[in-house]
Length: 262
Length: 279
Image (cartoon, chains in turn brown, cyan):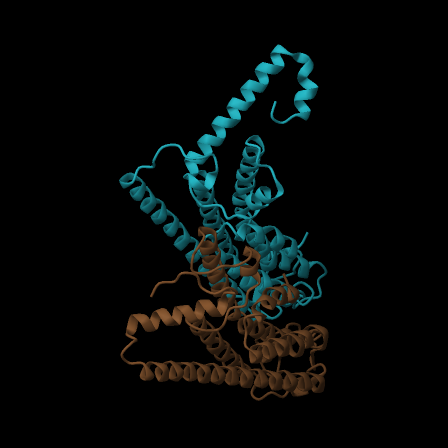
């Protein structure tokens, strides 16, 4: 179970995302996960072995390393990426549930909707409306929250995003204040800034997607309100709901609805 | 065979699980196995090489490491994850057995065309009857294994915290020496993380158990108020699970006994009987 497996799991969600969501997923996999695996892990690979302190006192190096790096950048990024990509699974679960319901209807020989084949239900793309809209919006909201929390954790732990060359350590059992030297500080700073920049781009994409979804929602609502205003005598609440259902069904069905009574 | 292989094996079980079971499986694979593979293993990678004792005495380092870490966290977690995910295979085996029975029934009733066979393979089994008991046993075993490993962890590493310094006086160390552990804070963070996800999995398993029991009681109550009508067709989806199983067993025993009778009367038909499935 590794990043490849996560890619397989999340690839399926791609079909039901908005265009911005697809861009976000691409940025995540190519500019964050791939960079982490092919480049960043090598840079941090010798972080403890090459962390050198100016003392022969046994244990001083271990203690100083632990003091300055409570959790390594690489592990923090790995956790961040796992947490940020997981809310998309909520959407995948909701889509799977909808598909299951449609398959059940199809098997019962539902009069409301006709598909040529049950395979069509499996490959069909769902529009982001109704309860799926709420699930999708919640997943974006959680993504934003996790991104922000991890950015803050990073800033809090490493006091700014720069990696210094030298650290002064006086934790026991170091006999006095010793100089400790970090391995590849400049390269680490470059990658830290890169990952922060891409993280910010992802946050912006998520915010844009949220705005897009909200705008679409309000536009759709005002369109419905506009329609209801033009025909106030003919439509009551139930008929409006019925019309919405018809709209939804005709959106997703290939054939027209047969014999549907009002 | 690695974690990916286990994932392949267990994804098949997913189809026949409850919704809570699917969530549990996702939590196991994403928040435990994946975190173990991509993050935790590299934290514990240098646990022995960077374990430093304040002595030059040869052997003291190894002995002290062995004394304080009888089994590494990583290996304990790997064992825990394997044992916790394996009861799901009981369910997979039972489902495969039921599918085999259904296919046999289709062959005996002469409906063994490709379409029906595919449907048997693809359709989701209802968790009722003997499958319900198998499923509940698998959930109970999962809970048991999780609890046992949490207890072992607590016994071996009290408090779940990784200390920076341990004092060791095992032979051949000349006296009480200070030994320093590599990355104790990072190890504590990951230990707590794995502990939290383990607790979440225990809660999910208990919720699933309660859900299964409540559903069974509800179904039983419904069954008592609406007794089933007479025998339906042989096709399982029209009958309840137990009824279906009884029909299948009856057909198979009748078929077996008539085949045995015929072979007893005509020993020469043995070979033909092997070739012909409906003799």
